[in-house]
Image (cartoon, rainbow, N blue to C red; front, side):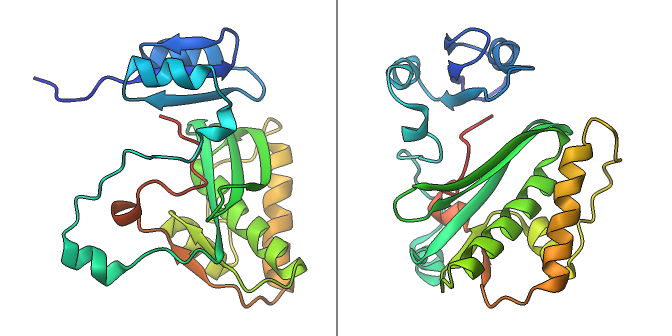
Length: 213
């Protein structure tokens, strides 16, 4: 017997808005809809309440999170450094419509957002988000660090290469132009910003999370 917990999906912007009881129903409302806004909730009541509010007040927030790690493990990991920004990406399909953003870790204030792009992947989005964050912090001469929950993206940034297997097509041409610009930035700019893996098991979803399925 399946133990998967039922979810309810709030759609703020889509072909139809409202609360939907299955991912398939939610997906039908956001597919091919530019700038769709949606998030999953554990109860119908929570989803209905969210519908009356603002999308940005719910994205990237998980107030119900309780870590399953031991006290000793949590103590060893410690708390996140709030003198930082967090970046994340979301993709509807893989490949699919992809967007990425960066937020202030402490306030959750959105600092930048890009997309959606056609035929993108999460890994490409995570990579672009880090580079975007690096460029922003360097321009501001900021000493803040960057959190990401993607080990793959961290590896790509260190290698100064977007090591994706996704094929370039006319549909994702704009996305790959941005990838090329990001790679060129890494090759031609020195930076002192530290990139750190977000400890999801200890702290919950990264604050820049889009709150999607």
